[in-house]
Image (cartoon, rainbow, N blue to C red; front, side, top):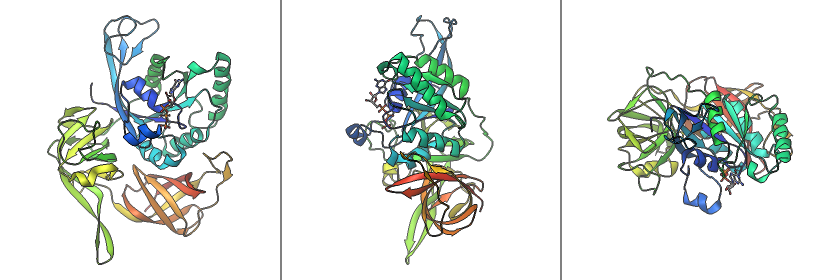
Length: 408
Ligand SMILES: Nc1nc2c(ncn2[C@@H]2O[C@H](COP(=O)(O)OP(=O)(O)OP(=O)(O)O)[C@@H](O)[C@H]2O)c(=O)[nH]1
């Protein structure tokens, strides 16, 4: 397997088949967290790498697969590219996790099960999140066609068409599949190849990596072999990282002294770089990377470092404890059964802000017409101009209400 070059998100309503599809494409379960197995829903972001191949013999019709020998004719294939799938949870309470995953997606597969009317609430909410974060390359997988009649599948297809009208997915191709029975997976691969290109990466800029997960080395089954020390997982957005590099992690760790808190950047050394279980000496953008470090595993366990940003010392963007953002609110709150109107942002209200892979609560200290000043519970490391997904607590849940831009 070569190094992955693109991250593709699996998004959509709970139980519509995202994890099953990642498994059908990659041959592995993207997440085997014990709590998730018990509850039967994805709780954290799942990851899996998958190499796509094209058969050299079966040209009519073109044959795509995930194995180096063609499953149809047994002939040789050529490798196209390796993809990292980011499997997001579809449950409504886990929207923040979905948003932090969306920050590292270059494109997305919106999975919509054909045996339920479309749209379901998180089908809407996830599509809106892609729109807000600016993910334009979307493919729709109309899943579970094995359990509906042809007539119902067509009716459902038309529901999808009506639902995506006027959204970022208006022209997204819709591929009917069965992830469980592995039907039409080759067509889905071909469509992903056509619709979700590899982004252009700048290798000359100083390296920036967004941390989406982190582990201690003791988590069974998931930590690549031969790693010691704390492991951070995420994606490089530009630049390169090499084994033995000195790195800085920001905002870093919280320090409290004389009742005042501050955040101190962490420095450490890269000991291993691993893509999909394989060690490399140099890591480049695209794909999900595990970085072995000399950090104390207690710091990295249970996603403790998620939301941090990694770079060479002295090169990372500023850390903000408060900032002003330009805001643009949605007309209606999506993701609830009855859409309701979005009220303006008010002074003193808490908002959940997703900036890159970081999620933080920001209390509004001043609300103006299209701007809000917020004081953050946890600081973020971000460039001026970064996009911010804004959620508000409505009932018992955080709901996406708009998008912001960090202006200073
Ligand atoms: N009949 C049928 N069942 C499917 C298909 N794909 C998935 N399923 C089943 O649907 C259920 C949910 O599948 P998951 O892959 O866990 O769904 P998910 O979207 O990842 O769920 P969350 O991550 O919790 O939101 C499981 O019982 C799967 O076996 C399919 O193509 N056909």
